[in-house]
Amino acid sequence: MIYGECVGPAESARVRIRDLANEGCALETDAPAAVFDADFSLWIGAVGPFAATATHRQAREVSVRFKEPLDARILQHFNT
Image 1 (tube, rainbow, N blue to C red):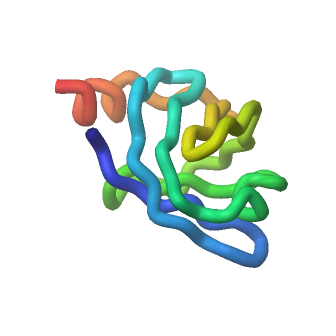
Image 2: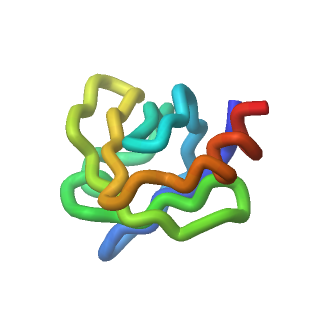
């Protein structure tokens, strides 16, 4: 599990990142839905920010799509 932070226009939230891929990932969070209502920035560990948008939310899980695909070196670093 990778820890990160989502920073929205008015709020931020700590998240746990799963299934990290170049196009997106899944987040687990206890944050209110308002953080994910608009575009936000995702910090993956201390790396970022990466522009992202939420594509689906169900209970404590949020599906995320990155505005630009992640570099392969970032994926390699976190998925090793």
